[in-house]
Length: 279
Image 1 (tube, one colour):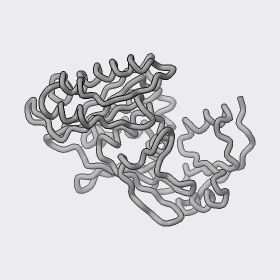
Image 2 (tube, rainbow, N blue to C red; image 1 turned 120 degrees about the vertical axis):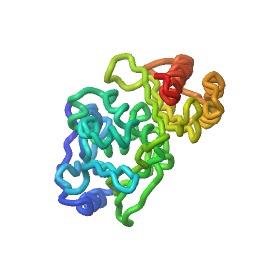
Image 3 (cartoon, helix red, strand yellow; image 1 turned 30 degrees about the vertical axis):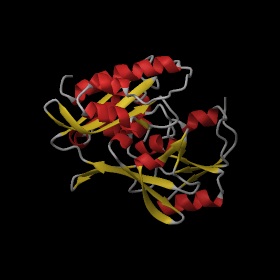
């Protein structure tokens, strides 16, 4: 299929992008990597009157590590994250997730900001940001603001972004000594969206864990923290953590709700082994 007709504008700055979005009163869409947007346009699931291209806006890409904090510009491509030595060293959870995202052609164009803003419930990066207790920087008509990743995702494809907002960067603590990460997902084919996935961060000493954060994706309308399972895993029992999984997934084209719950337990056992140094 072909998209419905739309106008095109290339933003010169973040302020220019905000102005263009405001001029079209909810009828405009930002074009970053376009890996999700172009598909929805072609299927006419989205029909904006204007595409605002932010690929030429300076200062929206890049990775920096300063004072124990990792900051990633919204226009940073997946492939850049995948190949970055700074990400491998200071954000290993992101590094573990990257090879699971679609295929190389998608990762060459897709951006972290686009993935987070699109908020697909089966996507890897939103769950990783919640697990990392990240912050999301947003610029809009009212100025700049920062939203915690746990508050950024509001529902199915819904976020804290307003119609005139531009996501500019994400930021989270660098992974230091004593912090462990785990990541696993199950998909029908490599590169497909996950039937179920799990991103995890914890403090560790030997087999003991504390400050556990377990965030599932593919099991709800947005990333899902399982706090009862976190507490049980910190108590030292993987079996108790699996029994405590407070998930209520819905059946979809990928799997039934019962299958998803079973797979969630399988992934928890795998990720717990990573956190405890057994995998």
